[in-house]
Amino acid sequence: MEVILIFISAVLVNNFVLSYFLGICPFIGVSDKIESAVSMGFAVTFVLTLAAAITWLINRYILIAFNVTFLEYVSFIIVIASLVQFVEMFIRKTSKTLYDALGIYLPLITTNCAILGLALFGALREYSFIQNIVFGIGAGIGFTLALVIMSGIREELDLADVPEPLKGAAITLIIAGLLALAFMGFAGLISA
Amino acid sequence: MGGVIILISLASMGGLGLALVLMLVVADKKLSVKEDPRVEKALEILPGANCGACGFAGCGAFAAALVEDKATANGCKPGGNEIVQKLTDLLGIEETESISPKVARVFCSGGIKETVKDKVYIGIETCISAHLVGGEKACLYSCIGFGDCCEVCQFDAIYMDDNGLPVVDLAKCTGCGECVRACPRNIIGLTDYDEVVHVYCSSHGKGAVTKKICKTGCTACKLCEKDDDTGAVKVIDNLSVIDYGVNKAPVESVNRCPTKVIRVSAPAPGYENMFEAKIKQSQKAVEEEKT
Image (tube, rainbow over all chains, first blue to last red; front, side):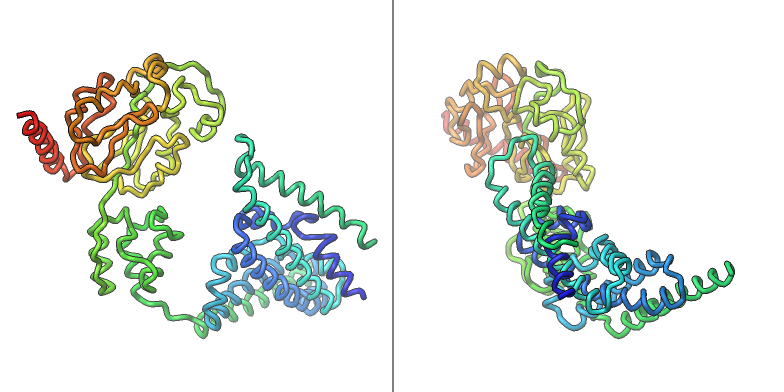
Protein backbone atom coordinates (compact mmCIF):
# COMPACT_ATOMS: atom_id res chain seq x y z
CA MET A 1 0.00 0.00 0.00
CA GLU A 2 2.78 2.34 1.01
CA VAL A 3 4.55 1.63 -2.28
CA ILE A 4 1.45 2.43 -4.37
CA LEU A 5 1.03 5.69 -2.48
CA ILE A 6 4.64 6.65 -3.13
CA PHE A 7 4.19 5.88 -6.82
CA ILE A 8 0.99 7.91 -7.30
CA SER A 9 2.41 10.72 -5.22
CA ALA A 10 5.53 10.93 -7.38
CA VAL A 11 3.61 10.79 -10.66
CA LEU A 12 0.74 13.16 -9.96
CA VAL A 13 0.55 14.89 -6.61
CA ASN A 14 4.19 15.77 -6.14
CA ASN A 15 5.14 15.76 -9.80
CA PHE A 16 8.85 16.57 -10.04
CA VAL A 17 8.47 19.15 -12.77
CA LEU A 18 5.14 20.77 -12.03
CA SER A 19 5.13 20.65 -8.26
CA TYR A 20 8.79 20.63 -7.17
CA PHE A 21 10.00 22.56 -10.24
CA LEU A 22 12.92 20.21 -10.74
CA GLY A 23 14.23 19.49 -14.22
CA ILE A 24 12.70 22.64 -15.70
CA CYS A 25 15.55 22.97 -18.20
CA PRO A 26 14.67 19.92 -20.34
CA PHE A 27 10.98 20.58 -19.64
CA ILE A 28 11.27 23.81 -21.62
CA GLY A 29 14.14 22.81 -23.88
CA VAL A 30 13.06 19.41 -25.20
CA SER A 31 9.31 19.89 -25.30
CA ASP A 32 8.76 21.22 -28.80
CA LYS A 33 8.06 17.82 -30.39
CA ILE A 34 6.20 14.87 -28.86
CA GLU A 35 8.70 12.46 -30.38
CA SER A 36 11.75 13.96 -28.68
CA ALA A 37 9.75 14.49 -25.46
CA VAL A 38 9.04 10.75 -25.29
CA SER A 39 12.72 9.92 -25.92
CA MET A 40 13.83 12.33 -23.23
CA GLY A 41 11.18 11.08 -20.78
CA PHE A 42 12.28 7.51 -21.39
CA ALA A 43 15.96 8.37 -20.82
CA VAL A 44 15.17 10.28 -17.62
CA THR A 45 12.98 7.47 -16.24
CA PHE A 46 15.76 5.01 -16.95
CA VAL A 47 18.44 7.07 -15.22
CA LEU A 48 16.14 8.02 -12.31
CA THR A 49 15.43 4.34 -11.57
CA LEU A 50 19.09 3.39 -11.73
CA ALA A 51 20.14 6.40 -9.68
CA ALA A 52 17.50 5.59 -7.05
CA ALA A 53 19.00 2.13 -6.59
CA ILE A 54 22.66 3.18 -6.57
CA THR A 55 22.29 6.25 -4.37
CA TRP A 56 20.28 4.23 -1.85
CA LEU A 57 23.16 1.75 -1.60
CA ILE A 58 25.73 4.56 -1.32
CA ASN A 59 23.64 6.28 1.33
CA ARG A 60 23.10 3.14 3.43
CA TYR A 61 26.46 1.43 3.12
CA ILE A 62 28.85 4.37 2.94
CA LEU A 63 27.29 7.57 4.23
CA ILE A 64 25.23 6.18 7.12
CA ALA A 65 27.64 3.36 7.88
CA PHE A 66 30.57 5.75 8.31
CA ASN A 67 28.40 8.46 9.80
CA VAL A 68 29.33 11.03 7.13
CA THR A 69 25.84 11.94 5.84
CA PHE A 70 26.95 15.57 5.38
CA LEU A 71 28.80 14.35 2.28
CA GLU A 72 25.62 13.26 0.52
CA TYR A 73 25.63 16.12 -2.01
CA VAL A 74 29.22 15.49 -3.11
CA SER A 75 28.89 11.74 -3.29
CA PHE A 76 25.51 11.78 -5.06
CA ILE A 77 26.74 14.20 -7.70
CA ILE A 78 29.84 12.18 -8.58
CA VAL A 79 27.96 8.90 -8.44
CA ILE A 80 25.20 10.16 -10.76
CA ALA A 81 27.66 11.70 -13.20
CA SER A 82 29.77 8.55 -13.47
CA LEU A 83 26.68 6.37 -13.60
CA VAL A 84 25.30 8.23 -16.59
CA GLN A 85 28.68 8.02 -18.31
CA PHE A 86 28.82 4.30 -17.67
CA VAL A 87 25.26 3.72 -18.84
CA GLU A 88 25.96 5.66 -22.02
CA MET A 89 29.00 3.52 -22.83
CA PHE A 90 27.10 0.36 -21.98
CA ILE A 91 24.10 1.19 -24.16
CA ARG A 92 26.36 2.24 -27.01
CA LYS A 93 28.04 -1.14 -26.92
CA THR A 94 24.98 -3.28 -26.46
CA SER A 95 22.15 -1.59 -28.33
CA LYS A 96 22.78 0.78 -31.20
CA THR A 97 19.04 1.36 -31.65
CA LEU A 98 18.51 2.40 -28.06
CA TYR A 99 21.64 4.59 -28.20
CA ASP A 100 20.35 6.39 -31.27
CA ALA A 101 16.89 6.79 -29.73
CA LEU A 102 18.26 8.36 -26.54
CA GLY A 103 20.86 10.27 -28.53
CA ILE A 104 22.01 13.51 -27.01
CA TYR A 105 19.49 13.29 -24.15
CA LEU A 106 21.42 10.76 -22.09
CA PRO A 107 24.53 12.91 -21.44
CA LEU A 108 22.24 15.89 -20.91
CA ILE A 109 20.71 14.17 -17.90
CA THR A 110 24.07 14.05 -16.09
CA THR A 111 23.51 17.46 -14.62
CA ASN A 112 19.74 17.30 -14.35
CA CYS A 113 18.63 18.49 -10.93
CA ALA A 114 15.67 16.07 -10.95
CA ILE A 115 18.11 13.18 -10.46
CA LEU A 116 19.94 14.82 -7.58
CA GLY A 117 16.59 15.88 -6.14
CA LEU A 118 15.40 12.29 -6.20
CA ALA A 119 18.55 11.05 -4.44
CA LEU A 120 18.26 13.71 -1.74
CA PHE A 121 14.50 13.16 -1.22
CA GLY A 122 15.10 9.43 -0.93
CA ALA A 123 17.71 9.95 1.76
CA LEU A 124 15.61 12.53 3.60
CA ARG A 125 12.44 10.42 3.69
CA GLU A 126 14.35 7.29 4.73
CA TYR A 127 12.70 5.05 2.13
CA SER A 128 13.49 1.35 1.95
CA PHE A 129 15.34 0.01 -1.11
CA ILE A 130 12.14 -1.07 -2.89
CA GLN A 131 10.32 2.13 -1.95
CA ASN A 132 13.20 4.21 -3.31
CA ILE A 133 13.17 2.40 -6.65
CA VAL A 134 9.39 2.81 -6.97
CA PHE A 135 9.85 6.48 -6.10
CA GLY A 136 12.41 6.72 -8.93
CA ILE A 137 10.13 5.04 -11.48
CA GLY A 138 7.20 7.23 -10.39
CA ALA A 139 9.27 10.39 -10.64
CA GLY A 140 10.40 9.37 -14.12
CA ILE A 141 6.88 8.64 -15.32
CA GLY A 142 5.69 11.91 -13.81
CA PHE A 143 8.47 13.75 -15.66
CA THR A 144 7.58 12.01 -18.93
CA LEU A 145 3.89 12.81 -18.41
CA ALA A 146 4.59 16.51 -17.87
CA LEU A 147 6.95 16.62 -20.85
CA VAL A 148 4.53 14.87 -23.21
CA ILE A 149 1.58 17.05 -22.17
CA MET A 150 3.72 20.14 -22.65
CA SER A 151 5.00 19.09 -26.07
CA GLY A 152 1.45 18.22 -27.17
CA ILE A 153 0.29 21.69 -26.24
CA ARG A 154 3.30 23.29 -27.91
CA GLU A 155 2.70 21.40 -31.15
CA GLU A 156 -0.87 22.73 -31.20
CA LEU A 157 0.46 26.15 -30.29
CA ASP A 158 2.35 26.37 -33.57
CA LEU A 159 -1.03 26.64 -35.29
CA ALA A 160 -2.51 29.10 -32.82
CA ASP A 161 -2.63 32.85 -33.27
CA VAL A 162 -0.39 33.96 -30.40
CA PRO A 163 -0.15 37.72 -29.75
CA GLU A 164 3.15 39.01 -31.13
CA PRO A 165 4.84 39.98 -27.84
CA LEU A 166 4.04 36.58 -26.28
CA LYS A 167 5.48 34.44 -29.05
CA GLY A 168 8.21 31.93 -28.24
CA ALA A 169 9.56 31.60 -24.72
CA ALA A 170 6.97 33.87 -23.09
CA ILE A 171 3.91 31.80 -24.01
CA THR A 172 5.80 28.60 -23.14
CA LEU A 173 6.42 29.84 -19.61
CA ILE A 174 2.80 30.92 -19.24
CA ILE A 175 1.66 27.45 -20.32
CA ALA A 176 4.09 25.83 -17.88
CA GLY A 177 2.58 27.94 -15.10
CA LEU A 178 -0.99 27.02 -16.05
CA LEU A 179 -0.03 23.36 -16.25
CA ALA A 180 1.53 23.51 -12.79
CA LEU A 181 -1.65 25.16 -11.54
CA ALA A 182 -3.72 22.35 -13.04
CA PHE A 183 -1.54 19.72 -11.37
CA MET A 184 -2.13 21.43 -8.03
CA GLY A 185 -5.63 19.99 -8.38
CA PHE A 186 -4.20 16.58 -7.50
CA ALA A 187 -3.10 17.90 -4.11
CA GLY A 188 -6.19 16.51 -2.35
CA LEU A 189 -5.74 13.03 -3.82
CA ILE A 190 -3.47 11.81 -1.06
CA SER A 191 -3.30 13.33 2.38
CA ALA A 192 0.38 13.30 3.19
CA MET B 1 37.46 13.55 17.10
CA GLY B 2 37.39 16.18 14.36
CA GLY B 3 40.48 14.68 12.81
CA VAL B 4 38.86 11.27 12.63
CA ILE B 5 35.84 12.63 10.78
CA ILE B 6 38.09 14.37 8.29
CA LEU B 7 40.01 11.16 7.76
CA ILE B 8 36.83 9.12 7.32
CA SER B 9 35.43 11.70 4.89
CA LEU B 10 38.61 11.75 2.85
CA ALA B 11 38.87 7.99 2.81
CA SER B 12 35.23 7.35 1.92
CA MET B 13 35.01 10.00 -0.79
CA GLY B 14 38.46 9.16 -2.12
CA GLY B 15 37.56 5.49 -2.17
CA LEU B 16 34.26 6.20 -3.87
CA GLY B 17 35.96 8.39 -6.45
CA LEU B 18 38.66 5.82 -7.05
CA ALA B 19 36.13 3.02 -7.47
CA LEU B 20 34.12 5.10 -9.95
CA VAL B 21 37.23 6.06 -11.89
CA LEU B 22 38.30 2.44 -12.08
CA MET B 23 34.82 1.45 -13.25
CA LEU B 24 34.87 4.10 -15.99
CA VAL B 25 38.41 3.23 -17.08
CA VAL B 26 37.55 -0.44 -17.38
CA ALA B 27 34.29 0.41 -19.12
CA ASP B 28 36.08 2.68 -21.56
CA LYS B 29 38.47 -0.14 -22.51
CA LYS B 30 35.95 -2.96 -22.59
CA LEU B 31 32.98 -1.15 -24.02
CA SER B 32 34.72 1.01 -26.57
CA VAL B 33 32.97 0.99 -29.90
CA LYS B 34 35.00 1.17 -33.07
CA GLU B 35 33.90 4.12 -35.13
CA ASP B 36 34.33 4.22 -38.81
CA PRO B 37 37.65 6.09 -39.22
CA ARG B 38 36.20 7.85 -42.25
CA VAL B 39 33.84 9.81 -39.99
CA GLU B 40 36.77 11.54 -38.35
CA LYS B 41 38.47 12.19 -41.66
CA ALA B 42 35.29 13.61 -43.17
CA LEU B 43 34.95 15.84 -40.12
CA GLU B 44 38.45 17.20 -40.72
CA ILE B 45 37.55 18.11 -44.28
CA LEU B 46 34.32 19.90 -43.36
CA PRO B 47 34.47 23.62 -42.49
CA GLY B 48 33.65 22.93 -38.82
CA ALA B 49 31.40 25.95 -38.45
CA ASN B 50 28.40 23.84 -37.38
CA CYS B 51 26.15 26.24 -39.26
CA GLY B 52 23.45 23.62 -39.94
CA ALA B 53 22.96 24.54 -43.59
CA CYS B 54 23.10 20.83 -44.45
CA GLY B 55 20.06 20.10 -42.28
CA PHE B 56 22.00 18.10 -39.67
CA ALA B 57 22.81 19.14 -36.11
CA GLY B 58 26.37 20.06 -37.02
CA CYS B 59 29.44 19.00 -38.95
CA GLY B 60 29.82 15.86 -36.78
CA ALA B 61 26.29 14.66 -37.48
CA PHE B 62 26.70 15.43 -41.17
CA ALA B 63 29.97 13.47 -41.34
CA ALA B 64 28.34 10.46 -39.67
CA ALA B 65 25.36 10.65 -42.04
CA LEU B 66 27.71 10.87 -45.02
CA VAL B 67 29.57 7.72 -44.08
CA GLU B 68 26.31 5.90 -43.48
CA ASP B 69 25.16 7.03 -46.90
CA LYS B 70 22.27 9.00 -45.45
CA ALA B 71 23.48 12.28 -46.90
CA THR B 72 25.10 13.34 -50.13
CA ALA B 73 28.43 15.11 -50.27
CA ASN B 74 26.91 18.19 -51.88
CA GLY B 75 24.86 18.79 -48.70
CA CYS B 76 27.57 21.06 -47.32
CA LYS B 77 26.73 24.31 -49.05
CA PRO B 78 29.32 26.49 -47.27
CA GLY B 79 32.10 24.07 -48.26
CA GLY B 80 31.64 24.61 -51.95
CA ASN B 81 32.73 22.30 -54.71
CA GLU B 82 36.27 21.94 -53.40
CA ILE B 83 35.09 20.21 -50.25
CA VAL B 84 32.54 18.14 -52.15
CA GLN B 85 35.44 16.90 -54.29
CA LYS B 86 37.52 15.99 -51.22
CA LEU B 87 34.59 14.19 -49.62
CA THR B 88 33.80 12.16 -52.71
CA ASP B 89 37.49 11.19 -52.98
CA LEU B 90 37.50 10.08 -49.36
CA LEU B 91 34.34 8.03 -49.56
CA GLY B 92 34.89 6.76 -53.05
CA ILE B 93 31.47 7.80 -54.25
CA GLU B 94 30.41 9.52 -57.41
CA GLU B 95 28.87 12.93 -57.06
CA THR B 96 27.09 13.89 -60.20
CA GLU B 97 25.37 17.03 -59.11
CA SER B 98 27.74 19.84 -58.22
CA ILE B 99 26.38 22.54 -55.99
CA SER B 100 25.58 25.93 -57.32
CA PRO B 101 27.29 28.19 -54.83
CA LYS B 102 25.10 30.76 -53.20
CA VAL B 103 25.82 34.08 -51.65
CA ALA B 104 23.74 36.29 -49.37
CA ARG B 105 22.65 39.70 -50.61
CA VAL B 106 20.90 42.44 -48.68
CA PHE B 107 17.82 43.68 -50.50
CA CYS B 108 17.48 47.09 -48.89
CA SER B 109 19.29 50.30 -49.81
CA GLY B 110 17.62 52.55 -47.27
CA GLY B 111 20.32 53.36 -44.76
CA ILE B 112 20.33 56.19 -42.24
CA LYS B 113 20.98 58.83 -44.94
CA GLU B 114 18.29 57.76 -47.37
CA THR B 115 15.33 57.05 -45.13
CA VAL B 116 12.95 59.02 -42.96
CA LYS B 117 12.65 58.19 -39.27
CA ASP B 118 9.23 58.75 -37.76
CA LYS B 119 9.63 56.93 -34.45
CA VAL B 120 12.12 56.63 -31.64
CA TYR B 121 12.98 53.16 -30.43
CA ILE B 122 14.33 52.70 -26.92
CA GLY B 123 14.77 49.09 -25.91
CA ILE B 124 16.78 45.95 -26.44
CA GLU B 125 19.12 46.63 -29.31
CA THR B 126 18.30 43.71 -31.55
CA CYS B 127 16.36 43.74 -34.80
CA ILE B 128 14.02 41.03 -33.64
CA SER B 129 12.78 43.06 -30.66
CA ALA B 130 12.71 46.39 -32.53
CA HIS B 131 10.72 44.70 -35.28
CA LEU B 132 7.91 43.92 -32.82
CA VAL B 133 7.19 47.60 -32.36
CA GLY B 134 8.05 48.70 -35.88
CA GLY B 135 11.62 49.97 -35.63
CA GLU B 136 12.62 53.59 -36.10
CA LYS B 137 12.36 54.00 -39.85
CA ALA B 138 9.06 54.96 -41.46
CA CYS B 139 9.48 52.13 -43.98
CA LEU B 140 8.25 48.90 -42.40
CA TYR B 141 10.12 46.80 -44.99
CA SER B 142 13.51 48.37 -44.35
CA CYS B 143 16.62 47.21 -42.56
CA ILE B 144 16.31 47.89 -38.83
CA GLY B 145 20.05 48.17 -38.47
CA PHE B 146 20.92 46.48 -35.17
CA GLY B 147 22.81 43.78 -37.00
CA ASP B 148 21.17 40.53 -35.91
CA CYS B 149 22.53 39.14 -39.17
CA CYS B 150 26.14 40.01 -38.26
CA GLU B 151 25.69 38.39 -34.86
CA VAL B 152 24.72 34.98 -36.26
CA CYS B 153 27.32 34.81 -39.05
CA GLN B 154 29.83 32.07 -38.30
CA PHE B 155 32.18 33.26 -41.00
CA ASP B 156 32.47 37.00 -40.17
CA ALA B 157 31.14 37.63 -43.63
CA ILE B 158 28.62 40.37 -42.87
CA TYR B 159 29.13 43.68 -41.12
CA MET B 160 27.26 46.97 -40.65
CA ASP B 161 28.55 49.96 -42.61
CA ASP B 162 28.52 53.61 -41.48
CA ASN B 163 25.16 54.08 -43.14
CA GLY B 164 23.55 51.44 -40.92
CA LEU B 165 23.17 48.78 -43.57
CA PRO B 166 24.65 45.30 -43.52
CA VAL B 167 27.32 44.58 -46.10
CA VAL B 168 28.13 41.05 -47.21
CA ASP B 169 31.80 40.24 -47.69
CA LEU B 170 31.42 38.10 -50.78
CA ALA B 171 34.85 36.55 -50.36
CA LYS B 172 33.89 35.16 -46.99
CA CYS B 173 30.17 34.43 -47.49
CA THR B 174 29.51 30.72 -47.85
CA GLY B 175 25.79 30.92 -48.45
CA CYS B 176 24.80 28.97 -45.34
CA GLY B 177 21.71 31.15 -44.88
CA GLU B 178 22.02 31.90 -41.16
CA CYS B 179 21.62 35.66 -41.73
CA VAL B 180 18.59 35.03 -43.95
CA ARG B 181 16.90 33.25 -41.07
CA ALA B 182 18.00 35.86 -38.53
CA CYS B 183 16.48 38.85 -40.35
CA PRO B 184 12.99 39.50 -39.00
CA ARG B 185 12.06 41.49 -42.10
CA ASN B 186 13.35 38.98 -44.64
CA ILE B 187 15.41 41.50 -46.54
CA ILE B 188 18.40 39.20 -46.92
CA GLY B 189 18.20 36.61 -49.63
CA LEU B 190 20.36 33.78 -50.93
CA THR B 191 21.18 34.24 -54.59
CA ASP B 192 23.24 32.26 -57.04
CA TYR B 193 26.82 33.46 -57.44
CA ASP B 194 26.33 34.19 -61.10
CA GLU B 195 23.16 36.28 -60.90
CA VAL B 196 24.12 39.76 -62.02
CA VAL B 197 21.14 42.04 -61.56
CA HIS B 198 19.11 42.34 -58.36
CA VAL B 199 16.44 44.63 -56.96
CA TYR B 200 17.85 46.22 -53.82
CA CYS B 201 14.55 47.02 -52.13
CA SER B 202 11.98 44.87 -50.35
CA SER B 203 9.18 47.39 -49.92
CA HIS B 204 5.68 46.37 -50.86
CA GLY B 205 4.41 49.81 -49.83
CA LYS B 206 2.51 51.96 -52.30
CA GLY B 207 4.74 53.95 -54.65
CA ALA B 208 3.67 57.37 -53.42
CA VAL B 209 4.29 56.41 -49.80
CA THR B 210 7.67 54.85 -50.52
CA LYS B 211 8.74 57.95 -52.42
CA LYS B 212 8.09 60.14 -49.39
CA ILE B 213 9.93 58.02 -46.84
CA CYS B 214 12.90 56.62 -48.74
CA LYS B 215 15.18 58.06 -51.43
CA THR B 216 16.21 54.63 -52.66
CA GLY B 217 13.00 52.61 -52.56
CA CYS B 218 11.13 50.88 -55.33
CA THR B 219 8.22 53.17 -56.17
CA ALA B 220 6.60 50.64 -58.49
CA CYS B 221 6.82 53.11 -61.40
CA LYS B 222 7.06 50.15 -63.79
CA LEU B 223 9.74 51.84 -65.92
CA CYS B 224 11.85 48.71 -65.59
CA GLU B 225 9.06 46.53 -66.86
CA LYS B 226 8.31 48.81 -69.78
CA ASP B 227 10.18 47.95 -72.97
CA ASP B 228 11.94 45.15 -71.14
CA ASP B 229 12.65 42.62 -73.81
CA THR B 230 14.12 39.94 -71.57
CA GLY B 231 10.82 39.49 -69.76
CA ALA B 232 12.69 38.95 -66.55
CA VAL B 233 11.46 42.04 -64.69
CA LYS B 234 7.93 42.29 -63.37
CA VAL B 235 6.38 44.62 -60.84
CA ILE B 236 4.42 42.45 -58.45
CA ASP B 237 2.64 43.85 -55.39
CA ASN B 238 4.33 47.27 -55.64
CA LEU B 239 7.80 45.80 -55.93
CA SER B 240 9.97 45.08 -58.91
CA VAL B 241 10.84 41.38 -59.00
CA ILE B 242 13.43 39.68 -61.16
CA ASP B 243 12.61 36.23 -62.44
CA TYR B 244 15.94 34.41 -62.17
CA GLY B 245 14.52 31.58 -64.21
CA VAL B 246 14.81 33.75 -67.33
CA ASN B 247 18.39 33.20 -68.37
CA LYS B 248 19.08 36.78 -69.36
CA ALA B 249 20.23 39.53 -67.07
CA PRO B 250 17.92 42.56 -67.48
CA VAL B 251 20.89 44.94 -67.67
CA GLU B 252 18.91 47.59 -69.56
CA SER B 253 16.39 47.91 -66.74
CA VAL B 254 19.20 49.06 -64.49
CA ASN B 255 19.61 52.27 -66.43
CA ARG B 256 15.91 53.00 -66.49
CA CYS B 257 15.30 52.74 -62.75
CA PRO B 258 14.89 56.33 -61.42
CA THR B 259 15.70 55.48 -57.80
CA LYS B 260 18.54 53.10 -58.74
CA VAL B 261 17.26 50.16 -56.71
CA ILE B 262 17.83 47.81 -59.61
CA ARG B 263 21.58 47.47 -59.74
CA VAL B 264 24.32 45.39 -61.24
CA SER B 265 25.71 43.58 -58.22
CA ALA B 266 29.31 43.42 -57.18
CA PRO B 267 30.67 40.11 -58.39
CA ALA B 268 31.96 37.55 -55.95
CA PRO B 269 35.76 37.25 -56.06
CA GLY B 270 36.78 34.95 -58.90
CA TYR B 271 33.59 35.62 -60.82
CA GLU B 272 34.47 39.07 -62.21
CA ASN B 273 35.06 37.85 -65.75
CA MET B 274 31.90 35.83 -65.76
CA PHE B 275 29.88 38.87 -64.68
CA GLU B 276 31.35 41.01 -67.43
CA ALA B 277 30.69 38.35 -70.02
CA LYS B 278 27.13 38.01 -68.87
CA ILE B 279 26.49 41.76 -68.99
CA LYS B 280 28.06 42.05 -72.45
CA GLN B 281 26.03 39.13 -73.71
CA SER B 282 22.77 40.72 -72.55
CA GLN B 283 23.69 44.08 -74.01
CA LYS B 284 24.52 42.42 -77.29
CA ALA B 285 21.21 40.61 -77.33
CA VAL B 286 19.36 43.87 -76.74
CA GLU B 287 21.21 45.63 -79.56
CA GLU B 288 20.56 42.82 -81.95
CA GLU B 289 16.90 42.99 -81.23
CA LYS B 290 16.84 46.73 -81.89
CA THR B 291 18.44 46.45 -85.33
